[in-house]
Length: 80
Image 1 (spheres, rainbow, N blue to C red):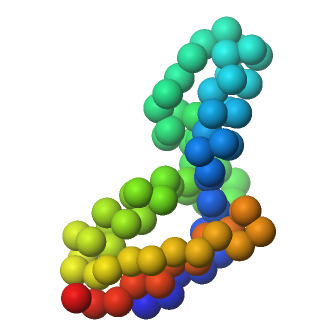
Image 2 (cartoon, rainbow, N blue to C red):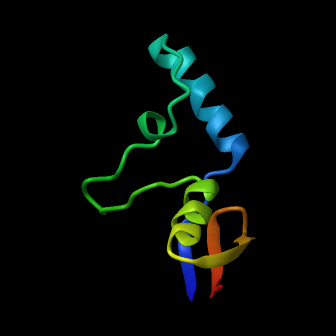
């Protein structure tokens, strides 16, 4: 199974978002899903790389990934 075109949220982007919230809104949030909420207009949902690995593992797949242009994620999963 190949999953491509997913949004890649790097650790750098996560830290940058936390700092931006601290500066702009005077709050610190380490909750990924509060910092990257789903986009109601486009329907996009944001997941951590570890979430994808867990999803596939729970379905009995072994996953590997590649990051394209530091933005897009391609995950390749094979059935165990």
